[in-house]
Amino acid sequence: MQYRLLSEEPKTYALIFDPGDELAAGLNRFASEQKLAGSSFKAIGAFSAVKLAWFNWETKKYQPSVVLNEQVELLSLVGDIALKDGKPQVHAHVVIGKADGTAHGGHLLEAVVRPTCEVILTESPEHMQKQIDPESGLALVRLQ
Image (cartoon, rainbow, N blue to C red; front, side, top):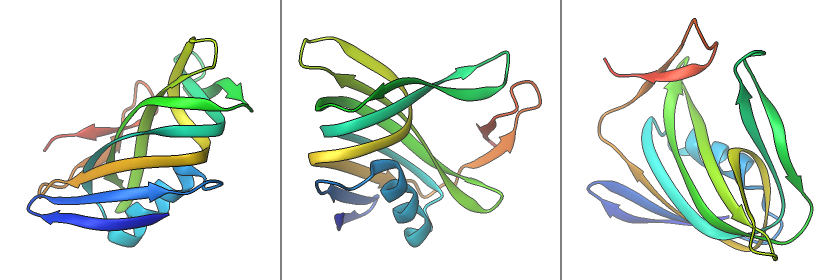
């Protein structure tokens, strides 16, 4: 992955992922290295494999729902980065398109980039904090 700072106010980055890069791990690594704490991002591109999940309210866990080992288009990726226990946590949702025109979506678990993934990430001057929600068991953004 390559990146470049595009703007200081607000701090905005372009992240360009290369073939074979794993997107979720790369976003997490970048968030940690840059000490991000209140960011939003969007992306387009394509993958050679993807694993998406959905939140099962009964088990209070993310369960894999879409596992594809084929070329797909990244139609939309949106997400945020907030602090949980003082560390950046990435949360992203994805919609992908298959060759037959069908689309699948969900919570990003893993995605292998091919040929590229272009992410625009903007850091807010206000940091966001995640706290465990007792009802869902999830770390959710809480405005203070």
